[in-house]
Amino acid sequence: MILARADRATRRYGDVTALNQVSFEVGAGELVGLLGPNGAGKSTLLSLLVGVRRVTEGRVELFGGDPRDPGRRQRLGVTPQETGLPPTLRVGEVVDFVSAHYANPIPRAELLDQFGITDLARRQTGGLSGGQKRRLAIALAFVGRPELVILDEPTTGLDVEARHSLWAAIRAYHADGGTVLLSSHYLEEIEALAQRVVVLGQGRVLADDTVAAIRDIVGVRRVSLTVADLPPLPGVLGVERTDGRTHLLTADADQLVRDLVTSNVPFSDLEIRPTSLEEAFLTLTTGADRPVDTGSSAATQPITA
Ligand SMILES: Nc1ncnc2c1ncn2[C@@H]1O[C@H](COP(=O)(O)OP(=O)(O)OP(=O)(O)O)[C@@H](O)[C@H]1O
Image (cartoon, rainbow, N blue to C red; front, side, top):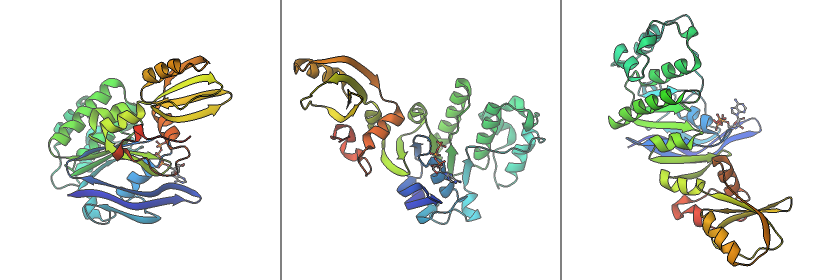
C-alpha cells in the first residue's frame, strides 16, 4: 500500500523552481530518508506531502488522496523544520493539547518517557533550550499514533545523546509497523535509520535506492594532481580541470594511484581527499542534465565533467 506519493510534482516560488517533476512513493512500513544539500527542495517536497503547500504542476497524494483533507491528516504525524510552541504553556499541557485532537493518543507519561523528556513535563516551553524544544516537537508528531510520520531534519541542533535517543524512538515506532519519511543533511543519520534513500538535488530526484547503493556514490574520492596530459585510466568517473590542476573522481583511489604510477606519466603534487556528500552529488551531476540512474550503478558509469 502506498501512503504518500509525488507524481511529477513541480513547485515554483516566483522564478525559483524548488521542485522539478519529482516522482516517488513511500510504501506502508518503509523508513525512507530524503537526503540533499541546502536548497535541494526537501522541505518543499515534505510541505506538499503534508498539505501545507500546493503543487504548481503534477500531483501529490497522501493515503491515496488530497493531503489537505483533514481526515487524511489525522493519520499523519509531522515535525516541520521549525516549530512554534506556545511559550507560557508547560510541556505536559502542550502534550495534552495536541493529544486532544486524536481519538486514541499515546498517554502523556508514556510519550514523555519514550522521548526522554519526562523531567521537563512541568517546565514552560518558553524556557526550554533549543534541543529540548526540538525533542518535544518531535514527540508531538507521534502522539496521535500516526500511520505515517514525516520529520523535516529532526535532529538538527541536538547533541549526540539526544540524537541517539531520538533514533531509538523512531526505530521503535518503525518496528511496531509505523512508516517514516525523514529529511536530513547527514548521511550518518540516514544510514542509522533508513533502508531506502531518495536523494534530491536542485529540485530533482538524483537517486532513489538502497543505503548501500547511495553509499557507493558518496564513497567517491577526488584525486588531484598537476599533469600535462593524461591517458584514459580505468575507474575514472569524472574529470575536472581548474587552475592548472586536474581532478579525477574515482570510487577506488588506491587503484587509480597505482595506475597513474604504472602509466609513467610525469605528474606532481598528488592529493587525495574524500568528496563531501554535497560535492559528490553536485560533481556527479555537473553537465548531466538528467537524473543519475543508480539502478545500473551510477558509480561505475562514465561521467563527463
Ligand atoms: N517561500 C519561499 N519563497 C521563495 N523561495 C523559496 C521559498 N521556500 C523555498 N524556496 C526556495 O526553494 C528552494 C528549495 O528550498 P527548500 O527549503 O525546499 O530546500 P531544502 O532542501 O529543504 O533546504 P534546507 O536543507 O536548506 O532546508 C531554495 O532555492 C529556496 O530558496
